[in-house]
Length: 388
Image (cartoon, rainbow, N blue to C red):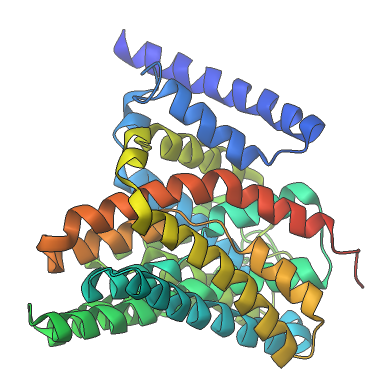
């Protein structure tokens, strides 16, 4: 009986999500925001009627969905796109990540936050929400330079973010006299470097072997096999599945010369899995954490928002783009989700005295950024004319 109810529940969610998609287009609200609100309404914060698999936040499910997103984002870094926009993508992504980290650290230290919390939150601020950003871009239908740059930036900025986060955790450990800074450095190097190495190890043979049975295009089974192996091996090895998926996607799209449409099949089934991820994220949100937000949390949100705008403007100016386009890019990079929460949980183990504050601020700010971030992304996309 329970299995039957679970099937009915998932079927109903698919149909409700379809209706929300249509409703979102009418009221001009990103479906990501609506799905997260749906998850919160049907999950433990609300009616508590979500299927058990979504209520418990099954790690394997979320890892699979996010690895799929990362794989497709990696596919957006095709050599012709990089040749045309590579400088803009690299400069802007580095600018946004670095200025976010510096801005948040300065703001939190200025209001008297402990050095450890300020540095950890500065590292966390660099993370984005690739799934939400990519979905808003797809929903908007934009395919010009701005959309290409945005997808390229969210594909690589979590790599910069993980490296900066690892460095800041190491510095915080040194200043706090806590556990070994070397351990923090090794953890960061293993998570980021291991994820990239795993993606390369899977992507290289996949670039040659896939697309042979169905001439010029990987079959659905081949694409799913790559994503599942990436996600599963990353969880087993405790490395970043986002970086593994992204690296595999970059390698396949650039080295598989016999492919004509390397990601065509997997794009057809991406939405149901990502849809479940957003609903699950909404079901896991604890609105009560907003009560523990406090001035530190408010300062973190304000500083990160301002830093995104400044970082986008700076990156645009350095790469030869207009300042207005840079401000819109910074606004489009507002969403923040699962990667940030993962960073918070990792840092909580290293700084137990500050764990409660770090986790509460991160999860509560995630509620804010996941609800309003996609709106900012949609607004930014709507304000940029279609480019060549």
